[in-house]
Length: 399
Ligand code: FEO
View: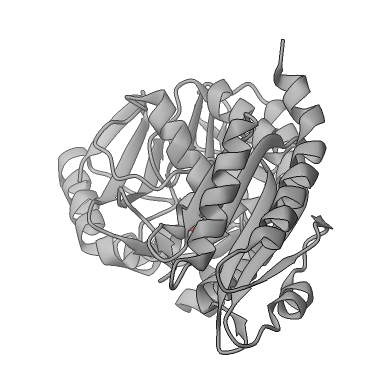
């Protein structure tokens, strides 16, 4: 772990977690992740913005110790933009190494940090919207950006250098040795996945946070996961499109098949949508990474579940996907269900009870075993319904 200069007096202290494969025991991390802390050195005071995950505390403290020895580093303030432990986990150890340091954060984040890490109350300096902290030639301004993705989240803006330290906001799960994106398209994909998995339920809140940040001149966005953005407009524009109400004509089929009947349904639907030039993505819930499904749902217009039955209900993979998608709240507009049963099927009612999103529910289809002629007719009707609803969106894309 090394201190990498962004501009004079501002350093990235990034702890890469190259081989972490799961976050929150839930979210797949195909490319690992990083926990980014930043050092801002003013003429009079020094601030550390966020820290790193518990698992990287030793590396982090080793670096701070090295900086203490080499450049006489002293930390006066630890800015906590977010209380979650992947960024706050090392704060108690930093306070031990720099006993004079105060934790600067908002009132809600202070409460969380006292509960999560037992940091004593007298260690805090509480700030609110628009407050400024003068470090001597470097001024930090605090901008409340709640619900990205916890209620206490905030952004710290370094006025002189025009750097927004946004913590999870705009982040991406990727371990990388590059300070800035070396492949912007790839980083946008990572950021979209991250948005889908963590931020998507809060897209309306994020819209107002984006507006707040747009009012600032920003040269760099320095999030707490993934690379620093040296072209901030790229990620901000991407976020604007993700949080908008616009969807694109795209059908996601989330399915599991046990003995091939559901797979046949999926094959038929994929072929029919493809023949009609409607983008379709079949997503086998048994083998695929659920983060990829979330990412595809960021802008998809249509979602179809296809499920066999286990006992008399939908397959647990599909039940889990419904539960998760309810929680992620994508802006999908149309949802359908095709289910194939052997000896008993209560799945349609089960689905209607479980599904919580405000979407149009297309007529569910229940098939006994392998589809017969009359089932293909029902599937054809589903295809027609989906096409009819997506046609205006498809026409809008045609020049
Ligand atoms: Fe990266 Fe919400 O913590």
